[in-house]
Length: 470
Ligand SMILES: Cc1cc2nc3c(=O)[nH]c(=O)nc-3n(C[C@H](O)[C@H](O)[C@H](O)COP(=O)(O)OP(=O)(O)OC[C@H]3O[C@@H](n4cnc5c(N)ncnc54)[C@H](O)[C@@H]3O)c2cc1C
Image (cartoon, rainbow, N blue to C red; front, top):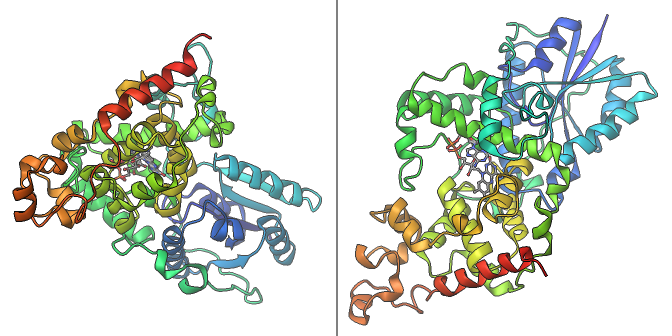
């Protein structure tokens, strides 16, 4: 009788799960397990919002496994110790898992593999995290590593895909004698005060509902709607993709042949691009990809950083975006770009502050995507472009992407009565208008913490200086 353990990590689903499906084909007994550890729950990258979503996703997964006759075993501690202990207890010959490409995951999996080697327990990775099965199949025509998105995207579209994995309608039961353990209560792993109030629920069921809703109602208009900040025109699947509650490969097979769907598919490719980049260049986790920018000096101004975090910069579109992040543990992509440009090129603060703060709050906070995008908007990463192209004027961004002020007024109620003509630059309101709008600048709403035009010149000069020959 053969026993295989399936170690769930950020693949919390039953649909299209190659590791689980192969386990059911290879073994008589299949033991699904999830392991809580301190890195996940408490280290610098952890997040109470993500922990809540994780618990919801695990509860949903446990329910789905139980409906098929199995269960989810829960353990707490170091992955290598707990997996080894469990494997010896149930006499498992193999442990299957969905491969992950971040530096953290690769290091952890290496440690686990080493810990299992002496006991002759096989540790085998499967695809499932990305639409493509093998990142090493992607390269430029010259055979080198991609560093630019568009050629990567063309290459990615052409790479052969695996079929969607279909789970049997019944799973083998967990041995009676095995202690299944239990999913911890929310209050034991989160501080309530840090939880954002308006969030999506975790879990595969919620993910599939959201996907179906998006495919039915919004995907065809994605090209027009995805940059309108007040409109719910994007899928909001990012958190589900991060936790693997839904499979990008399966989603691909469900897309219609429309311009909207093609534009959306391209966004999915960005996710795969940044996974590829962090896999190929793991030092990006700490350092600028472009070596010449490792010499940039950043200002150190805790007050400005706090104003940015609190949505108190005096620039309405920046403040609305930062307040959306706190309220929803999610932020519109355009908003992320605007606040990223503002932090690095208006406030002249290190992109790593932004990366860390996003990781702290975002449910979709993801080492590959977050790092890749922060490096992109700070102009220090792959897919390079001249610095001025990613240096946004916040007032113009607001006029372009929130022309009626619906998004700003939703998240910055102090500006509710400010007339549209002043909404992007409320500090230009004459005093009598400030009074009738119940919004005295400097009292009810901050004056701008920096002058964009001046900051822009300083930023351009700063980037130019580190690249200019001495
Ligand atoms: C500074 C910054 C930090 C970011 N940090 C993260 C992060 O930690 N986690 C994360 O998932 N996304 C991150 N993004 C990318 C993007 O903003 C979100 O994926 C997107 O807003 C999620 O909303 P959605 O699911 O409705 O997206 P949709 O527009 O519906 O896109 C579909 C999917 O494509 C992927 N995607 C879309 N845009 C990008 C992109 N630029 N890079 C990578 N994948 C993309 C996501 O998985 C997304 O769910 C960041 C962007 C910026 C500018």
